Length: 88
Image (cartoon, rainbow, N blue to C red; front, top):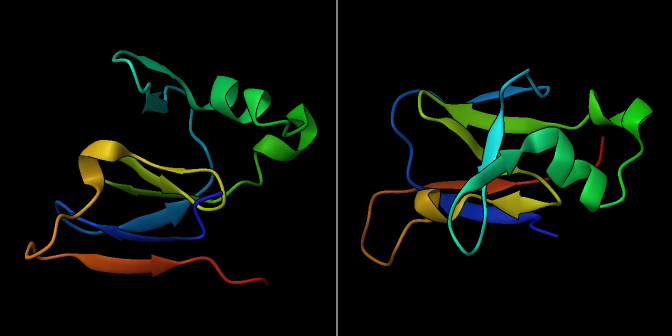
């Protein structure tokens, strides 16, 4: 999973639970719902609401332990924010 990430942020980053309408990008283009991505990753439906999501004004940036949105990954030399998942 993606336990750490360097991301480009537009505006404030917020940590929250999944919201209706949250979408994540697909490798070949297009998007899918965050819920569908979590289901494909084996997260039971009853636990999906408890998954942390990091978002900015554009939408989902990082789902700790699962994925970083490719458009948000910082390239060398770009201003970035370091994110790291820690156990509660």
